[in-house]
Length: 325
Length: 265
Image (cartoon, rainbow over all chains, first blue to last red; front, side, top):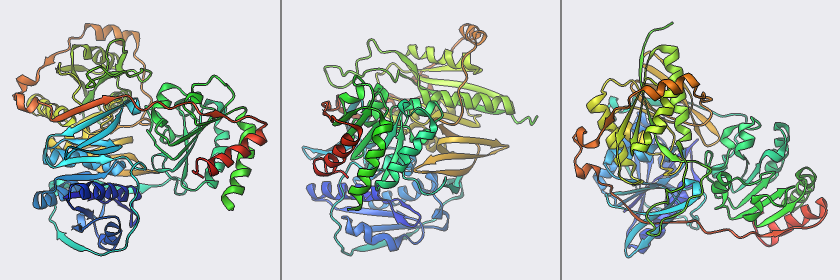
């Protein structure tokens, strides 16, 4: 069985978990195996329909009052208990903040290796291979895991969703006991800064600014564009972040986030190697820069050589028109 | 001043400079190291800085460890020059295995066998290179202690701590008991530069060497269980086309292309 951990936030299933489940189902079908989903925490039973709709044959729900708040230690404990009972061959979860925190803890608990942040899962001669970017995308590594179960996290926004099909299936509830020594760290609060901003790692469209933005105040222009484009987020180059123009959580590149959106706008970004590494796997890249020699034009699908401050207002108008149609 | 004395251990890695171009060896199992400039992993710098600040505020000791070849002593000297009290090289001449479980096993064993009196373990949130983000959580699990990853704020009070960690579009506030493992994210602090005096003092310090064998780890423990099928360069993107015209024309054309041709808007 391919067992997929389904992450929930604010009572909703994460889209990236459904992407992972979709991929699990595709690979399970090829191997004539089944895909299963596991939820942790109270009330997750009501979300099981999402898992069935995206390919799960069976849904497990792990319950204990202590699991109402996320903690890597207790969640890994709960998952390991289930894994020991049902012995899945493959365990997958999304390479989100939670997935990246939880999966290595689970791997160590099970004594197995983990392939992190994979962008492709192959079946080579009936054996699973995982491809993942290293050096922020400057190279790709393909690995086989020689420990069982095989454990991997998959990068959000890379694996296509299956078409949603409403169906039902078996829900297996498990009441677990969680020992006190598995509760040494607990999330006590989630702090959101002004509104619900989409993270660059989850956005379909990223609108990034670099040194050419000239100052922090001009990032408002990018935020205005982001407000028009659905599922978009504002990104930045390292020089803009290091200049203090925008928070580091927006940074794209080797010491920031590696992203693969459908569309990446680079405004006033020259294209340092660290930045290119982090965004070159975007489906489409648009660059606007004054300097026709800027390296960013070497990777951009569409380029505009010109003053971004003159182009953005027209771009905004046209986008508004186009998106309201 | 509150005298608690925190016994802090920082784990650092020697990685290629982020400006490096990465080339793949012909056998397609490793990168070409020749000509690369190696540095202290940028995220580890935040970990070292945080350790020094905690020590300055609470008293205690900062020990820095690196698992790697002899050349890793260069980055350990940098940590000493920044102000770490001691540095230890855990000598491992095995070429990069990308196997975090193996690394974590060795680190956990070093602590259990040689330094069981740890209060706080600090790491960078990932090494720039292997990009695994696995070692801190795995070490924490092997030692049965709590973890907080991708931390941008850390406070220690007695035998307890509070940390803020970055998640998608928000921060998580996590409380934990000591000992604990913490991994540092950019934004945690502004790492200091080494002073000339620090550099001179660091030169004189001895860096003890520990080998995995003397920790009682068997060849089987040390074998990598990640099988590298291949390393390759990413597909090369081709330069696309330049849209010509006045700002108004280019804006209009671009949106048209994104809608009709690329179909992404």
